[in-house]
Image (cartoon, rainbow, N blue to C red; front, side):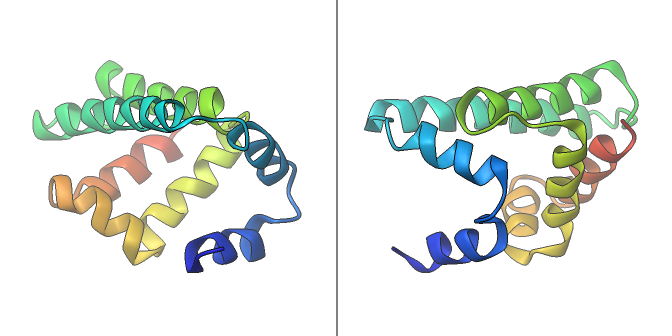
Length: 120
């Protein structure tokens, strides 16, 4: 178990979402994990498009990105409710690793993703 696996287990190990994610991913092949990454990247690119075109967070395109983000998580890991997605959004700006992932794409994207998710 690596450092991140241990951190995830400590933070979310007692949740239904963690159990569901563990159950699903235990059966995944390398190709499945690659496909999950493609879906996640596609959702991120929708956010990049909306943010890069200065679309408001309540715009149709920004909210399509929010839905694609939630759908990718639900498809590959666990049923992601709007409330769970909001918890993730809070982490995207609070945890430097997630903030760097989004802001590494486009500076300010993490806050935009957070805000677009939070208005649901």
